Length: 577
Image (cartoon, rainbow, N blue to C red; front, side):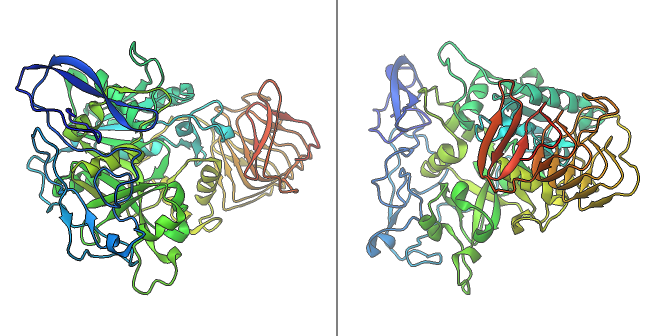
């Protein structure tokens, strides 16, 4: 097989430079195997890098090209002591694929007897030409469809509100601006109208500083004559824009490194530290990881990296490991008595790709069959490990939380006000909106300050501009967005109000958004909702899932026990849910 990207098939014979041959183009099939589509054209000698099949699970654990994890458990004791690995070094221009040597000597072990750490592949060598921040291009992935979240029926997940004032995408973009990244590309596709409006309004060139040449560009998904479907996975989305030339700046400026970011994760990071790790290790790919205690995270829904304990080199990766596989991935202290006390390196969805690695692993893909998807975590990173790329981890020590569903969004929001309200992993969420060191940018508003009339009780809550709280109200552990008006004697606990863009937006000055004497517990209230007097929204019966929605999309949804009042809904006085 020729090309920079390559599946587990027989190698093609060597050819002379310029010779016309029948050459293959990589295509990912629905069964997750790569094949080559013949095409005749003059070619240069190919750089051959052996890549693993996506579906071949029959190879021994640890063998390059296997979808199995490098340190996966073996059913036989002998197999646990003998691992085949590829000698990772700089890619070699060759007409034959590299042969994987066997390691017969004793292999250093992790915690369990069945855990095998492969032989170190290459010494860490600093990059001969370090990447500078002005040569980094940031690509923010704004996400795809999310059918189970009622909040994303009309907007992208990256556009969801957070902390009353911000949206999720504001945090990765703010990290870029504060880290002196001057070229930011936001890739959108699903329900992108609200997100497009927000990015265009919140990030004029002035946010980069006076005299700085910076920009935040929104790049919508596209179709071509050859590919008539929408983007199929995060890597496919980047591939299409990379091949079209959209990931370049003015004057054909081209990045020397690509910073790939999720638009749906909450954290504060200085990417200059990550670029420093990338340069000092001479890595082709650097992965941002968060070291988490297994008892604090749902690791079976995350990507887990295997990292050498004495440096940052990554030798394995597993996307959404099964519970029994976590025993092989965890790093445990000698005195650890329970698996929950062990730690794993969780993939944050933050990557630095050298320009060469991006072109050889992603840019070379020419077609993906409809119904198939290609993602960085599930597909590209395991391929890079199996094809001898140098991959290192950069550990992030602060708060990090991906927002993949309604529950995670809800708990992350409320943890700003009450860090001990939910799981221990949310401790530190309040640092997200601490602008004493670095700013978080968003759409500026000219609204009056919040106003409290009479005597009210407000505890561990976040109250935004333009909010009016009448006499006798009790607000606890809640986030109240802009311009929400409460009537008298309203009780609110663990509730998130998205708020309105302006005062008296829908109902006028004389009608409160939440009527007199209403009680709300464990709810999400979207924009332009009118709740009549005496309503009780507490889900007292503990319903886990329900939906009451009319033909106009108004009503409420209960998902995972949370009541969500949909945008534009009017609840009559005395309504009980």
